[in-house]
Length: 492
Image 1 (cartoon, one colour):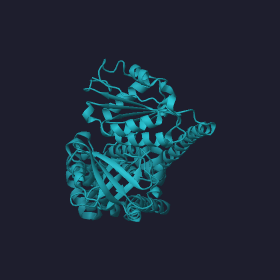
Image 2 (cartoon, rainbow, N blue to C red):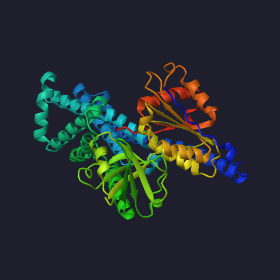
Image 3 (cartoon, rainbow, N blue to C red):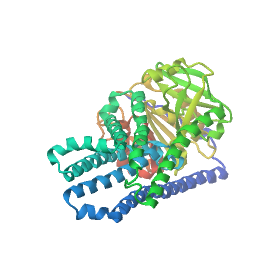
Image 4 (cartoon, rainbow, N blue to C red):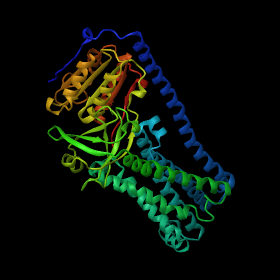
């Protein structure tokens, strides 16, 4: 069963003056300029990453690696493979850590979810390369030392560890990387709590630290060339400084400077709470509707881990609000937070903002708790003097009316601005993101009927990953350009 609530108030809102129309065009122009900036900076980031890989491989080949790979004996070729895969693996691992450092320009270009996706892809390449690096060297040295290839892989490691002490820490680093890779598999992530998964992945820093003595030891490929030695040292220092600055010093100093504390906790619905956080000069955070932060509440059983939650209201310079559904012990414990509890935040993060807007009309699509950033975006759009009545359409999908959150707030915003709110409820339909009807086949047409002139809208989508995939399929079927579809997937 589906229900729809639509609020139109065009008759009660006279046309905006010409200045507002020019402001609306200015917003569109600013969005297009932002799009061009993101494209240019994104290309530079990717070019820099590729250049770093080309550089380390080129220097290795020029320094004799080419001969080792092509004209040496097969043990020497194996050793050559081990050397070059090790260099590439180290470079990729440091790039992974840079992505984890939450550099502001990377976050603005790619968004938090796409940065995390790139981090995962690099991890799927890095760990196999590390294993190839280790086994190629072990087999190559074993055969060169006169051992059989069939037994050398088991015997040679003990000989190497005896002769080269720094390989003990390198072996521990490799073991940690393998554990991290295993727990990154989707099935493993589903079986673990966020807290345990996060704790395991923090050991990546320990893995890098344990590997440094081996990687930068005298005679290694990272130190054989003075210029490359300087390059690797600069890269290590730069990555470490980025992590310490952006993940530690900035969040702590920012939280203390603004004096963030819990003001109140409000139950929005059974199993759902809004936490109001206040502080000093919060406008300096430059938080935007649609963004999220990693929130750490300094209360018993909560202080150890930070969790990513979206802002559920437009930041006003005085308060921040997050709305959380009971999805585990940590989120459930927020209901018992006391006023005055100190709060530390990392962020704000994310590119799911109106900064990407390039159209006057905006369609916001939400499902489940994905309504929280959409509700904040709706408020920002409704408060914008350049937004005309009817420019904003919100579609909120839920299995039942009881599952819909913040509906009264959305309804009030729609009424006030003369915009449209559709509440669509009903049990899930396989292959469709809409309730009722034929699975998937008419979703695009039904969406077109609900919205009208769909291709003239910027579309923001937030909800469960599978639901968002179906929405994207409908938007593509309706010929909506991917440049006008914006989402951010809050997964880990």
